[in-house]
Image (cartoon, rainbow, N blue to C red):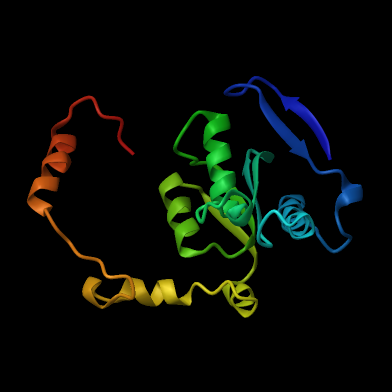
Length: 181
């Protein structure tokens, strides 16, 4: 992998160019190849699950992520979340419109939510959720739970103090100098 600084676009962004010697012959997309390589490196290192992800803007990798759930004791440290956080940090924005994410596996519900909130323009994935499910990374429970009424979920969700909490929502709604997202 060759590291070099890319222009002066929105700060000095460390770009990673894929050295073709590191790409398997059957991997014809260098961004997906990098996401897959990150997933394999993660398996070998023992830092987390078999997942890797890269965020790309204008044909340049601006951020990478590999699953760090077990090494950081953070259940939200999925590869996509790590890559999105790093991309936002490097670009100094919370909106990644115009960026694409390449991920070694179809995003879970949490990562998919983050992808929509970050407004990524496109998602490319390699393994399907069914592939991950077969080795113990099964998201089907979460999808089923979302369809259930709050009171029937495995983790009870109990609404309380709504009127008191609405004060903050109304304050936000009426705030004239807010940064919308």
